Image (tube, rainbow, N blue to C red; front, top):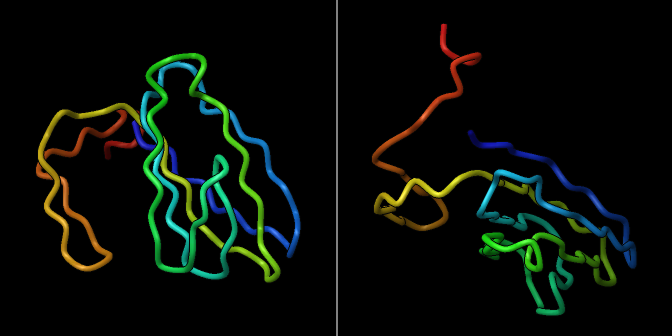
Length: 103
C-alpha cells in the first residue's frame, strides 16, 4: 500500500511527522523551495529517502527555508524489487494495489 501525501509549508514553518505503523519506508520529493529534513538540507527537485523499519526512525522534522516549500511524501511497505531511475521519474517493476483500489 502506498500513501502519497502533499506537503506545503510557508517559509520558516516546521512540520513534525511520524510514519504510520506497518509502513517501513518513506520518500519525500521536494519540487519547489528548500529546507531541511531530519536535520539535512534538501533543495528543489531533490528526493530524501527515509528508512522507517524501527520505531526510533519513524518520526522526522521538515523545516521550510526562507521560501515556501512544496513536496510530495510517499510512505509504504518495501517491495524488495529493483527500481529503475531516469531523471526524476521512477518505475517499479511490481506494483501491489490495495484490494479496495482494484476495480
